[in-house]
Image (cartoon, helix red, strand yellow):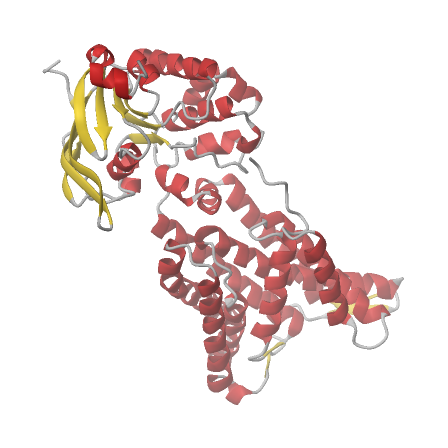
Length: 292
Length: 240
């Protein structure tokens, strides 16, 4: 039972990280109708920048600040790439473009950071990496903090999208760009705003990953990206709440498979489950009936 | 009539889709408080004109002035902010968003208006919207959606309302309800309205003046009553 609880918390916090990545990609989907495959690469780049900044300054706060700056700058810098494609309603091209950005970031990390070696983060950077005991099992406080942080960030973003004028404008753009423009929603500015918020989110994800995982390497972006894209499809593209729920569900399923199934069956179960859902519900697990 | 303030003045406006001319040297005037009908069959250029006024399409030649200011090359959001609202063709519902959210988006660019007061006024005109305010807009009936589209356009207290095909896909009974509400709003709130309509009979019945567009050119203009009696309009648009 204790180990079950430990696994559950583990799974929830992994699921929380997935949820934030999917949330970020859904946000970008809203404002530019793109699948920003490289969003998770930006999150990993943030981690690397944090590692570098901490190496130079030995100051956790400065390192985190550098991560926020990197996240916002890099994410917003990709907006002009997508704008012309988004304007003409391109579909596949945007995926290719986003993958290209991801590959470039992966290469940059491999070439420029720590000679391509894995970067491990010091205990100062991991802030709350203290184990604590619960009966016979010990688990990391970082996992619980990560979970709480995910909830706080996700609640804030959902609030932003559903309760503020700019959030509503972003959702309106996703539903009907022509009508959104007729209501006076500026295509350019709202998009940049969305990318900026996604950038802030990418830094939060980087920090949470540092706390939970404690390392970063060039390949991490790809691993996250594949899962995030699949989870997006799984929940239904642009479905904000569905994306969060399915990500958390997936994190838990993964953790349980890892703990209770023989061998390394995690991935097979992860993708098997998703394949079935995509076959049965092509518009996503949480897709509503199309409103007429 | 000469003394009343000019709301919208379009002169010598030409718009092209690539090599195809969609509007050719169109002149049009709308004065404050007027309801002006813009008539024409499908493809005559009515929607093109509406979209060009708000800057979704760009004019090749000509000039659009709104309250004396040149808005020909202005960005859509700036034009909306300066006091023009649109009821889009096909109602333009944000179907998955609630009725309330649709209305809130109506004031996105109209900062400084009293949303709650206007909301009360709208719920008085269209009580059904109050009942349905938390429903997704896509679940409303066609007539209710048109009410919502109008409400969303007027909640920001625009000076000029552009209505694109208000009567499209509505039952005749609803068309009358909608038009009567519009007249009442105009009389009480002093809106100025440009009405792009295929349904010439209804449009002329409820407007002050009218323009007839054909293949992108203005072929007729005048008093609504005169146009209704005009033999060309009768044969071409009123089916007489």
